[in-house]
Image (cartoon, rainbow, N blue to C red):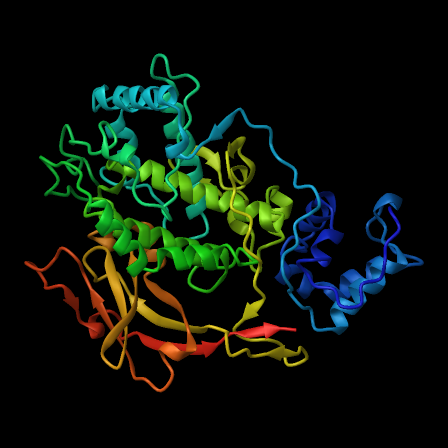
Length: 488
């Protein structure tokens, strides 16, 4: 072990999580002790200190792994200081899985690369709908008719990462396209002209995707061509639904977090939902969203952002990724790690051999929290945003994707889009997470001394139920607002 220095004010993310080797974590997991996550280390901290403290430690059992007096004192300081979480600090060198696939921005492809990509897409679209590697069949995995997709839960990012690789493999199976990679569209920029040209501009479904849907057939999607808003409308919607704000907030999070609570995944999922609602009627409808060719470029960028975040917080390996979890890592272990209908698992998705030409790693990490142990010190800055949560929305009776509008003194100040099937009660994942929250981060001046109210709109249902959905039929959600604290 190299010479270590005592850290007077250590934090979990900057210091403590690096004290446990993969073999330590694996060995103790067999004994039912979690050293992979913040909660696990905090819960077992006193026992860890006792068993690792020099001069007579009994853990780790090998001499090479035993803790120095300096490391032991640093760990003791962490306990005494109230187990501070801190801000993620990536390792000096982040290990990378070697990659033969480098995905590029759609705007930077050469003309030759673009023509090859067009050939690959057109080749998939020309295959018989019944072929398992046809465009129709592959898109049908996400929505109709197979409806496998996992949204609004821990496996959302892993599932889509694997899905992109499966689709990319299919593109490579088209003759002459063996080296093609799926580009990304950075949604912070206008919809590229290239995505408004065939075969990326639209897709006409060759047959009814709802005919074979279970538990019952779904009508209304044949004949059907995918539809989008104009580039100008998309840009306005992206701003209105807070997509860029949610992306920026997600990239500042030090922890993976928990859906409906906090952390990277909570805000990244909100950005995903808002992006779907921004792009058009097809992308806003979970039944058919993946049939629009823009779906693949949009999701490729979301995966790039996730990989960027992994690099920022030192989470490109399974051990590093688990260290950013504050709660259970069960979904990364069998049998809870399944990503049906794919053979790959959520733990394997953490370091797939895929790379991007550019990662977004520039934003500084934030150290804001909603609550702290009383033993900690904190500050409230005038510039700190207010966290406003519309809490307890019962979504299962809302017919399809919807928008949640936040109003101050009767005037809209923010809105978010929630992406779901038209019949959420028929969706197993939806039923597991039937009560959801929507989060806003707002400047203090936008809400202080003003009356806040909420409305829910269901776009595209004006002829059936009206666009406004009654709050009392959505679980009578509440508004919760709190200042975010700066952990000192």
